[in-house]
Amino acid sequence: MAEPRARRRDPTRRQRILAASAELISEQGYHAVGLADIGAAAGIVSTGVYRHFAGKPAILAALLEQVMNLLGEGAAGIVASAPDDRAALTGLVRHHVRVALADRRILQVYHLEARHLPEQDFGRLRRAQRHYLEEWVAVLTSLRPGLGDGQARVLVHAAIGAVQSILFHSPGLADDRLATLLCDAAHACLGVVAVPRAEPSGEPP
Image 1: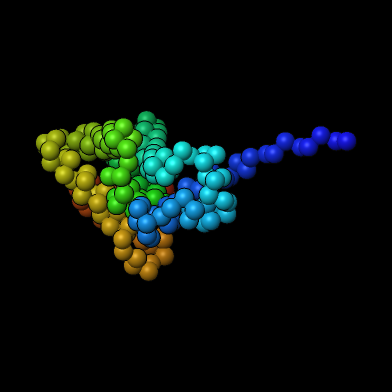
Image 2: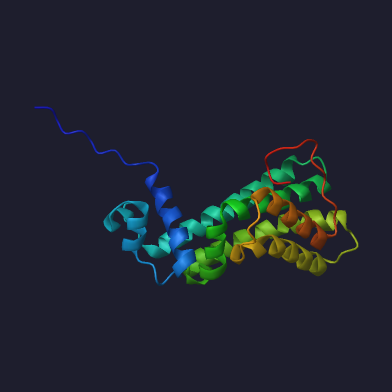
């Protein structure tokens, strides 16, 4: 008799859990969503969620860490590879717009529910956020040396806030048009003109 085949773990299951969690929590709130709801939305039984996460706080931590890593690692790569500071700032703006459009649900959860993280996870998230903002501030103060550190931080927060204005407002515009408006708004806040694209592409301008 043939031996039973070992059960293979679905490599996409963890990501399905995170995607379902972002959707549900952004719509209903952290406390209103249970593991059974998340499992059902992800297409698995609730006990299957525990194969990947210890509980709902761990799901929230992983979800927010995922988007912060995406922003932070992207920013570090942009700054390291940019030919000059103006190109770096343009890249930072465009990258944040891309993430805001692609991961709107997760960023909504970040803004509304991060306070529910366990203290250690919340502290780690805040440190990653501060490091991300420092990338922007360093480039901006290099381009505008007359700005004080506090002024630069205000402008960076304003620029990021302009991009994230779409998180809780749906203007009904196509993503390419919306990306153009958000990039323009962010650069207006920063007081730095964007580097134009060399040629048309399907990416946000």
